[in-house]
Picture 1 (cartoon, rainbow, N blue to C red):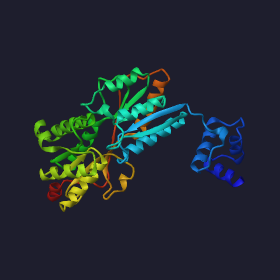
Picture 2: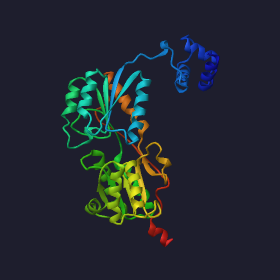
Picture 3: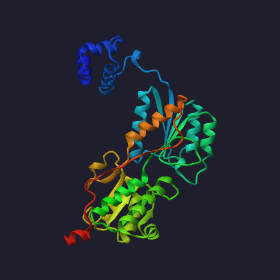
Picture 4: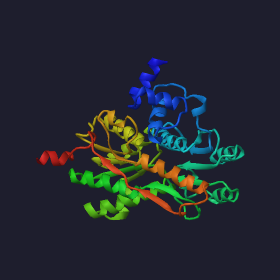
Length: 344
């Protein structure tokens, strides 16, 4: 027990006497100090004494499209931690090919009496989907928040990154390196984030390189799947059109882009520059480390939870879209255009 007290005290940065007071539920300990001791317990893998375990305020559902793309587990972790801190128990429900649909997962969560639901990259992002499903959910009295996607037909709070700014940041970076033939690899056009990325890309390429919008969309935009293989296929097509740089709509696609270049005997970034989107966990350790546009995951996840809890508490946030600014992270997968180096 003494060893455990000293370990916890060292981890929390407090005295053993303070740890003892917290573990025994004694008064006279500041709330922040108490939280530090409980966090130290969790970090060191000790179980909290029964009397200190938070009573759950209820279940909150989190529906994600898949977990293969590391950005979704990263977002789920932020949301889960924020919910737990507020005394709620997160329930992660994931769609898989051939498995449960979003509607089935919603029904399952509602049947279990969840206090609310957070949807990440759900059908609300698909312009061809029927948005009535969300109005039916609202009619059942279930609060919900929608992350990554937007529809004016749904009365709810939306949390999004600025997708237009994301592609503008990437294109501006590549043009500054001397690239004049820049491609965009992204998912199916029916998704709102895809449409917004195209808008930002077309506008920036038009402004900086003087190309006509119809030429940009026809020659420099390639739709595929949001997977490594999708990025590889799209980049192959863009390299065939003499692109020296490719902006990808996800880091997974960017890894496929690097593979496509190498299959052609091209080097990244010497012959082809590649930019990703998300800044997924571990993406800084790829070969080469990936230049990417960082999605503001912590801010978005915390905002989604805060907004949902306001809905649950009966003081709903405005039913509008809260947009978060992404950030360009320059690493080793972008360099000056091959022609620029030759002139130098």
